[in-house]
Image 1: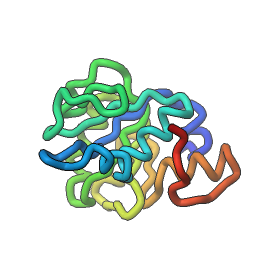
Image 2: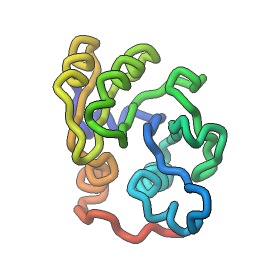
Image 3: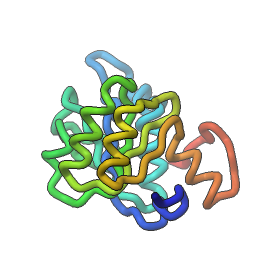
Amino acid sequence: MENIETVLKNSQTIAMIGVSSLKKKEDPKNIKRKPSTIVMKYMQDFGYKVIPVNPFAKDEIIHGEKVFAELKDIKIKIDIVDIFRPSKETPEIAKQAVDIGARTLWLQYGIANDEAKKIASENSMNYFENLCIKQEYQKIFEKMNPVFPVLKK
């Protein structure tokens, strides 16, 4: 298994499962405050292509990218599947990540699942849990450790 720095250096595309969309009658400013969209924008700012996956927001545009309903709908190679969903949903997502040939399964801060870890391990995937991809990027490449700094507009 590769370490986080190697994974981040050698990856170009991230499928982000559970990127938030705007709810009806919600203030459009709220989308900028949601952790998943903050992380998505941050990783885009550092050169990653981030594909949002959210069946309830299919075909919407978030941070310039079309939202897909499922991983299998994405037609480009995905390096990292980054999950912003409850832990209990991760084994099924792990199976889908294997099916599309992703190299890394990443469970965001607060998310962990032994079954998802086993699926990743049995399929020679890198696996990280309970870690924020944005914070790890900051620690390694920017030598900083804030939770959510103000993003540049």
